[in-house]
Length: 373
Image 1 (cartoon, helix red, strand yellow):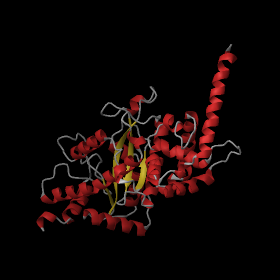
Image 2 (tube, one colour):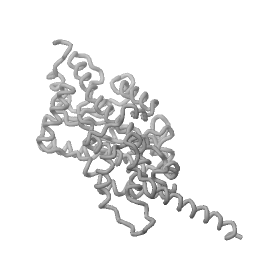
Image 3 (spheres, rainbow, N blue to C red):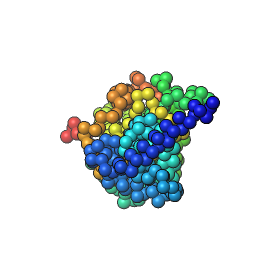
Image 4 (cartoon, rainbow, N blue to C red):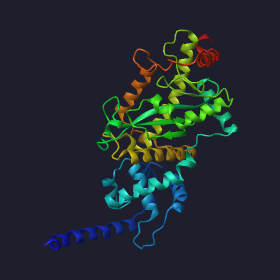
């Protein structure tokens, strides 16, 4: 009886496999017009082929005549990052794979990108010459000397994880999220990303236990001076992490805060660029993946973003509309609140050594106040 009812289903599945294979043979993603290609895969054909040439040699090939071409697999993976979840990917005539195969491809390519792509495109370390260039570019944008990067945390919504860990990912708004720590430079290149932190953790907690904090602390302890990151008041003031005054009174304090805000706007541009390119990160109901896979997706999105920045691969202006409006409004609110001492409960100046307070005061007093010129 089971075989009687199961046979038609198996015939149907085989028919679908044949149809998909014929579609793949007749259509390749690279044949799409450039504008349609970028809309579907979020990168230009040039960057797509660059990525393809980088990751393909790392893939263990399968010697089957019916094997899905690697160019189709990569297109399927990028389509998933574009927010085209696996059911839609499976029905896409340009990739023509089943939903189950789409899921497997996403998992396989996340491992390949994490092992062979992310480390190449995301690096915190700079040569002395690179650091000089970054400082100069930041100064031209903010009129603050010696900035080497901006640091912030951003909550990326996920769907409810497993019940045994769900409480860890519940954030202050009651939703579930990953609190990703990110450092960027003035060119909007991501210098560091850590998307392993559950949403219940506040920004300063995430920073204090992070590798960059230990890295820059070791530099400072070894005698390096006049270098700093710029963060908001959700981070505790440190000799290498400058944050705004909570209650600016003197004119130089107000001026300093305004210039810090200019630096933080660079981070906002970076986050907006990443989220606009990869709508998978801003789905209104949260990412459709468990935290472990969501972490890898965030890392890979940042690495591909860097490749796009390097190759000046901008999305068309008409296509930069994927950032969730509610999320952007909330981010704007968070930015204004981070500079408002009456709203923020976290006191980033409490317990800060006087030496560190003096470093910030010296920096603030050295800045040119445009209003007084």
